[in-house]
Length: 334
Image 1 (cartoon, rainbow, N blue to C red):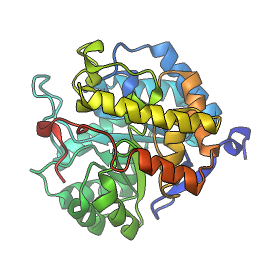
Image 2: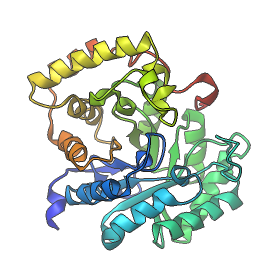
Image 3: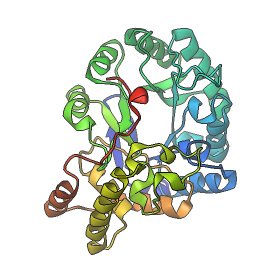
Image 4: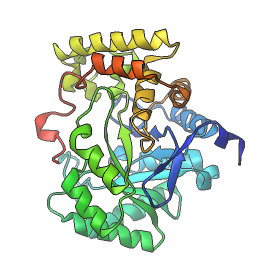
């Protein structure tokens, strides 16, 4: 066992053998959605993550808008430790026309094309986890699962994942090829998955990877109203940052912060510890470009919340944040 293996507890996702550090790293913000990129800071953060025992690194074709920039960044930063980390990427968007933001394409031939591109961009001969990024209503999920199953049989992919899929899609996909992990937004701020999705993945033995576990940054403390963010930052239009919702959410964060401070931890650590306490089949992937923030996030795996702490958090945010996580037209369809 190498030294860094001892620093972060490991968790098992699914029943196909996927095992990763209890906190992963999402890399979307390194190249899109949160303002200008800073490659050197991002590489430093990726290297620090590895040093601290993070093994699950999450990227996607979309995060480079088809250029491969995000995957290439990850591949370069982790090239010398490739066999010690789990690289997860995603397919499912049609990025051929920049004017068609959000267009989907999960046709089998497109899945294969994107996978070959991802392998090249990441500089590897296999992807550890291949996710369908969003469900494509025009392609039967059985065809998607079958194609990823073929890629697994060919050794180009190790594990099959879904993202933002609802109970019916999860069941149908899993019946064709075992799904190891589902990735969907989940945090103390965003609780929609608790009603219908979490029970199904647990019934089927599928691991759960929450993205945006810090409420897209609302829980980091460095938060401003929507109007204070530039147009290329998604928080400028996210409902949770709009007038009315923003003030209510800020009040909740202040109460969570007081609880965190009473325990001698950061509010971000409280939020991640809350997620980890929801089950040992959960591995959140907070995104950050700061090595310091990353170390803080990883340390949350060593925070234990009491029953009283969990009850207080539930009291502060019984149903999550005020405001939907996506505009109605962009809400994933379950």
